[in-house]
Amino acid sequence: MQLIKPRPSQRRLDAGLLLFRLLAGFALLRVHGWEKITHYEAEVRSIPDPFGLGGEANVAIAIFSDVFCALLVMAGLLTRPAALAILGTTLVGLFFVHLHDPWHGKDVPLVYSIMFLVILLLGPGKYSLDGALTNALRHPLVIET
Picture 1 (cartoon, rainbow, N blue to C red):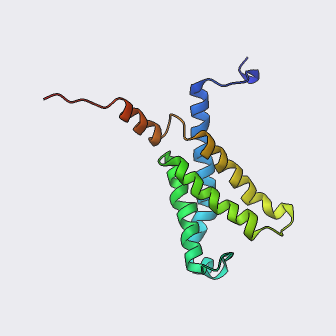
Picture 2: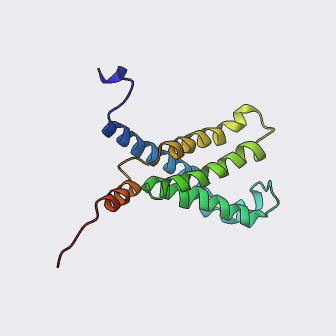
Picture 3: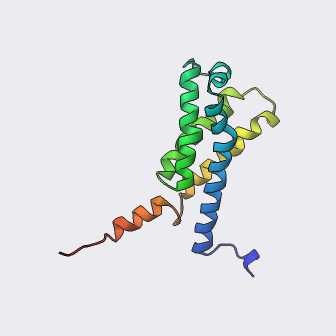
């Protein structure tokens, strides 16, 4: 029975990683990234500044993480570096911005940190641009003239 097997088949694991990457990236992009783009000026004025970089720099970093890196994760391109960048942003939120908040205020950066840590550790799987590029490099197309 499939429900009690301790290990999924490689195909199911790769499909699960694809679904997880798509959902995690979309959630970050839609809930956090899109807001920073569509309400840029308000974000610059209100974004936390734990390291004294200024609002514009912090919004630029957040857009890089929450939009650009989220799209890379969804595509499965440079997945681990993109997940690492997102993880850096979410951990700053968790340990610097929300450090003294009650636990229910820490749950969002904690959950995002866990999701992108899993992606960083497991990688993108076969159904990704990283997987396709790796396969192409292992088996280059030879064109004879």
